Length: 228
Image (cartoon, rainbow, N blue to C red; front, side, top):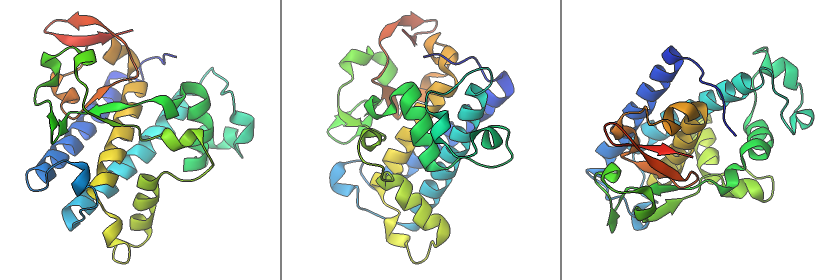
């Protein structure tokens, strides 16, 4: 399902936010190797990235739903309390609303990304390869959306930190950052689907993740992927 472009100014700002978060994640990888064995590692620096990435994901979902609601009826919007009020920015959607609305529209539980900087399956320049050949550590941040109505572990970590950073300090793990960033990347591609599918993004956008939910159609100049 394709959405229409949100607008160049919004798109550029969203890309800039994502690229800055990606840069900060790579700074963490300089000191903590990106491997599942280290996913329980926690620190003040990891905490700051997790809180910012979770906040950004929250904003992304609000914007995506409100944009998509213009001229479109969500399949499950009747299940969301005060949907119209929230869509008109008079109140905010919550994580349960995201799950109800976005899972029914996009089947996000089936969306996975390849973690390109994973220790043991490392792709430093992923755009040099065809996406089908980039197979390493797969991250599916929304997989539990297909199951019982429980909060994703990375979202629970973010909300715990948001409410009390000091008491929940050890919840700020590398694994939570990786999964939150994967969620951010997926929503980024949904927000800006035409831009991604037409190959009009900077190559560095793919440094951390490659989508495994689209089929590569080819390359655009200067070699960025186009998608079906």
